[in-house]
Length: 385
Image (cartoon, rainbow, N blue to C red; front, side):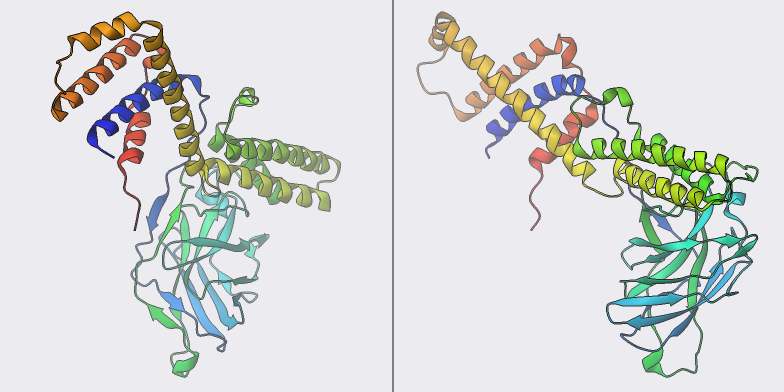
């Protein structure tokens, strides 16, 4: 595409961005994806040999939980890797609410070498004693961590890492049964970093109900999806997130009613865990942890800009057709000879500037720096090879 045509399109896009930014509803922006580095020199990434015998692996506490330890066996099976924490193999782990008002439980994660964290399962408590678990993962090479979380269904881990994998036992085992150590930093990516670490008192309600309450609260806080925006044009993910919040509130209401009727009834746990899971789904969509929120927002932005460009073109064409005298006058004032390329470019730039100045006097012409910067970057970016 030649420079003059690019400048012409940029002019139209900038003009279109002015009106679009004020006309479109304000959709929530996805949270930035952040990289969290676990600065623990003893941490290890291990690759487990296919269908080998079980490997004894250790997790030890970070500065947040120095006394915490976990011992588990990891064995490779066809299609998955199995992790087994035996009863009594978790020690020194205190209740999660001690880390702040947004934390109610712990989650075990398998983190791949490229920083993707997979939720393996919740570490629950019976009184003050953590309960053993048996879980699986499709990863073959990973490191393990335990984080403090607001509920069991979180899609991304919090920055509050309390345990991390430090290696394997059984130095005398044959080499073909030992996991292979992979060099690399312990890090992971997450959208979930906005947590309140202020202290809180322990609530007497069941932990599952507390998790459901917190999950619904966080989904509402993260989404920023006002109910009065229903009916306006919104991207698909925004609607899905709003629907999930509504459904989560319904199940939370059922859990609250069940708790009032029978505090120890099974319905309290059932409804609470359902509410937490649905709320987390809505939260993940709103923050961009799942789905194509960013891509879809850009697509919608470009579609709106294209519509504005088409409208302006039609307006300019209609204006020219309705005033032939002015068009002839402009043509007569031009040199008889064909202008040089740089003169043609100057005329086009001048026309763009005049148009922008004219529309800048209108209220709809105000637009944010971020909006047009994204448009320009998208216009000039080169396709990846």
